[in-house]
Image: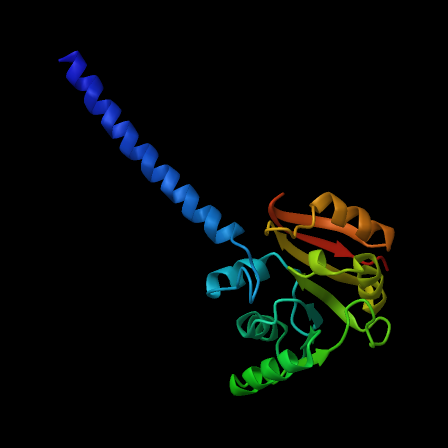
Length: 207
């Protein structure tokens, strides 16, 4: 009788453990899945919502987004900044910029504009944006330190830089490396979300 009871309890324990592990796996995939457009992909509203919940967005903000020219993410940004805010998306390719602009017009997103240019040489005025958002883009920049200087320049005093990175084959920006390079241009790390392999880090430009 004791042996049978132990066997039943063992089976029950295995079932409970399996459910618990499966739930943890689903949560990890939802929270830490790569958030990029064309490659890992911002697929589905849940990933977009999770990313935006980790970004210091407020109504009325002027936002510069670099990387991941995903219409769903741009719509989410535009919705959160509202009619008094505006989202600018920087694309390195003029062809992709035109395509994204057409998609946003079709979706009737009126407070977003698509720009074409080099992140390491922004043809934008100083102190223009409240938030710069880089999604899976800094690791790919050949002149990353110069790009960070440019982002710091176009941010207003007390403006934010949010960086989303996750492990990808051959391309990854370690959180410690990012913090060191951002500090070198005068940006202060305020908070971090996620894990070392998939994170969002928020920095702020001093007043």
